[in-house]
Length: 450
Image 1 (cartoon, rainbow, N blue to C red):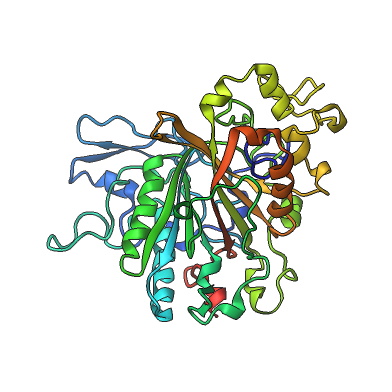
Image 2 (image 1 turned 120 degrees about the vertical axis):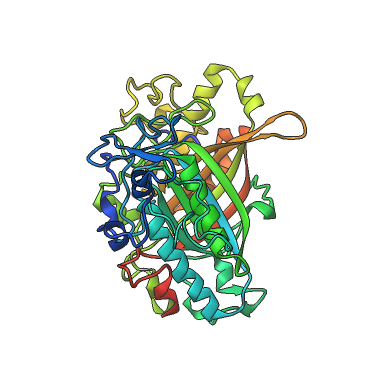
């Protein structure tokens, strides 16, 4: 399966205290002084029948009403904005939101200047959307004869802790032996071509990509709005290659929160790296200043993202006995405790666990201390042609170097994990995640093109 933690993971990973977006840096200037009316501000204008209803939610809050029949839209929903600017991109160590819209893009233009212009425009739009503001002149109020700058489906919704995390795939540097944008020598050494793992059944239509954007939010409409608008801005220059919606986070960067469960019903992410564990993040997640030499030095402060679409054979699993399910994972289904332990967070005694159990194989002690930060989501995409649920885990894992992280971990799991009988990897991609955007004049990928 995916890194040991990938799917069930339960015990693997790293743990730590939960934290909000604490590590993501300072607030964006755009957030402080929106140049166009924010979604919340629009509600207060009332001219279009909008009325703003504010609800307290951790210091900031907003709820909207649209017309006389509107109810407080976000009364029970976290409404705050996650800072966009900082040393690292938000959406990695940030407390995991409830929903995901992930998209990989193919770059269609061959013009380097046009690509750079797009990345600058994307960055500005991302900063505004994460602050809860509209893009450009907004969805309403501009020229009636022209399409609006913002599609508008997030009007009246709070920021919902939206984060947008940008990445660069290997094919942006070189494709078919061609140095596409004069970047071949800038490709980081750790941005490898992932090997084919035993059991992989990869669909090319669900993998790869020159660029990616991971949108996470507590409201699915806010996440979808963000990807939709970035794709719209990039029309003619980029095209969506593949995308994935996700729900029900399968891991957490906030150990104080309840441990989520995957589609097999087992707790996931008991020991995932905490967003506030600066030491673990530096050691296992952020690229160090000396990690990439030469052309890849621009990656310092960034990370590497592995994205894997893992189909889970739900119907087969549902006919499996509880005893076998627990043996496969190496923990009980109710509490989440490892074999022979009482509580979920009790340290597992690996020799007591079945040798092919997922937890035992994925545990850092079985893998020379390998730890990765997971923030995957469950997905369901209806049913296949045989009436089986097309569901599983959209595995997302950040690490300092995949050559010492996901690759050796997955090689071990792909060969020995008892869970492999019930899952299959059908999509795969790897992206370099640049460091964070420093301020209003900075933009996604600036270091790469410098």
